[in-house]
Amino acid sequence: MNAGEKRAKKRTAGLRRAAKQGKRKELGRERRYMAWKHLTRNQKEVARRLAHGKGCDYVHDGSWGFFDRFLVFLKGIGYLTTLNLDGEGYARRMITIAKLLLTYQARVLLGIDSVNKIPHMLFGDIGLLMTLGWTAMQIKEGVCKRGKGKHDGPIHKDTLPDCLQRLSAEEITQCLNDGIQLLRKIGIRFSGIFALDATDLTTTEKCKGRGVKRIEHKKRDKDGNPVVIPEMVYGFKLVYVFDVLRRYVVAAKMLQIQESENPYLLEMVDQARKNIGRDVIRLLLVDRGFLDGGRLWELKHKRGIDFVIPSKTDMAVSQDIRGMRRLPEDEHLRRQEWDTEEGTVRAVGVAGLTTFDEYRDPRRKRTSPQPINAVMVTCWEGHEYTPGEEKVFLTSLGVHTPREVIDRYDLRSLIENCGNRDLKQGWLINKYPKKQVDAIRAHVYLTIGMFNMTLAYRSHEGEEIAQECIRRYRLKTMAQARHKCMIVCGDHYAIFDLEELMMLLGQPVRCPMRTDEEQFRKLHGL
Image 1 (tube, rainbow, N blue to C red):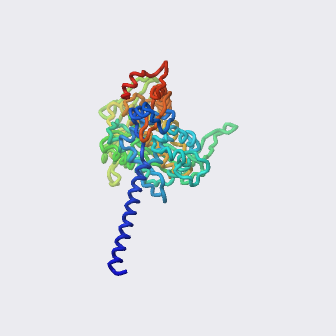
Image 2 (image 1 turned 60 degrees about the horizontal axis):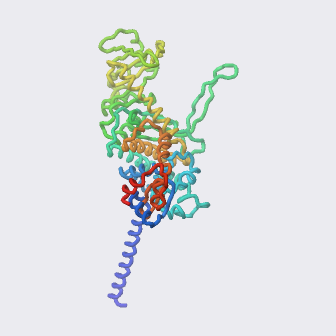
Image 3 (image 1 turned 90 degrees about the horizontal axis):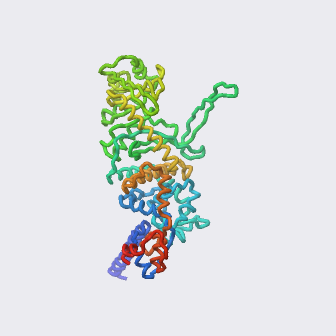
C-alpha cells in the first residue's frame, strides 16, 4: 500500500469516526429531550380520536387533575429550569436530575410523610407520573432493573433520597435562590415587612452531619424541690427571611442546631435583597437571638432597612428606659394607651437613647454609641408589669406613636404560625427522606421551593385561598376531580367526566347529572 492509499484510508476512518460521534451526540440530545418530555393536554384532539374510534393508549382515574394545572403553571413560569442541576455527585445518570427533583416535590406536595409510602401513594398514580414526564414504558417496565427487587414504579423508592444525598450544598442552595428570584421575575408583589427567625429541625443521634446542643428542663422532684434535668437535642437549625403578610420565604440557610444565628443577620438580608430586589425590604422584625448592635447599625445605616427587636433585661439601654417610666412627656418621650379585645395596652416611647454601647459603626471602635429609639410596654392586655419587668423593644423607627411600633412587631408572630408551624405540620419539612445532612438540606430547600410556588400559583390563578393551609388546599382541589378520568393518546392527554367519556364512545348516559351533551359536542367540535 503506497503513501496515497494510506492517507486515503486514514481519511476514510476519520470520517467514519466523526459520523459515529455525530450520531452519538444526536442520540444523546434526543435522549435528554425524551427524558424531559411531558405530555400535552389537548381536549379536542383526544375527543376527536375517541369519537372516530381510534382508541387510546392509556386510561386512568383523574384524581391527580389538580396537579395538571399546577404543573402547567410551573412549566409556564420556567420553574423546571431551576431544577435542572448538574448533579456533580453522579458518576452515571439515566434520568435527568430535574425529573427526579420534580418527582420528589410531588411527594412533598401530596404530603407523603415517609419514603416507604412513595410506591403506593405516588408511583401508584400512573396519571400523575405521566404528567411529571415518565413514559408509559418507564412506568410499566422501570427505567433500570439494577438493584431492584420487586418492581414498584419507574424507579426504586430509594432513588429519590439517594439523588438528594448526592446534591452538593452549593447546587441545592442555588436551586432555592433561583426559585425565589423567579418570584420577582413573574411579578409577585411583596409587602415590604419581613421577619427573620430561626427554628430547630430535630433529628436522631444517628443522623450523619447533625449538630447537638444541651438544654435544661426545670422541674420539681417528689418533695417539691426544684431540679434541673439536662437533655441533649440533635439536629439542625433553619434560619430564614419571611414576608409576614404575603408569606413567601425569600432567603434560607441551614445550620447545625448548636450554632448561633446571630452572625448571619446581614448575610441573610443580603441574600434576600439579591433574590427579590435591593429596595423591597423596608422593615425587618428580628428575634432577640439576632441582637447585635454593630450589625443592626449596618442594617439601618448601610442598607437603609428599619428594624424592631426585643431588648435583653440586663442591657443598660433597657434599664435606662425603665427608669423613665414615671417621667412626664416631652419632645423625646411619648406615652400612649389603647384598648384591644383582650384588654388595655400602655406603652412609652423614648427617642435618642445612647446607652446601647454596641450600636455604632463596627469598623470604628472608638466612636461613641449612636442614638437609638426604644418602646417600653408597661401594661399588656390588662396585665400591669411591675417595675423592672417591662418589655422593651429597640427600633430605628420613630416612636412619636409607640402603638405603631408595637403593632408592627406583633406581625412577627405570623412567622411562627404561618411559617414555622405550617412548614412542619402542613408541609412536613421535618419528615426527612434520609438520615444524612445533604439529603436533609435538599429536602428542606425543595420543600421551601414548593411552598413558595404554591403561594405563587394561588395568586396566579386568582383563587381566594391564601388563608388556607396546604391540607385544606389538597382536600379542596382533589374533591374537584371526582368522576374524572384521564385519556392518553400519543403525545396528548385529556381529562373527561365519565359521562363525557360515554358520549365519546357512542353510549351516552340516558339521564346525565353533570354534563350537557349538545354543549359538550359543540365545545369539542364534534
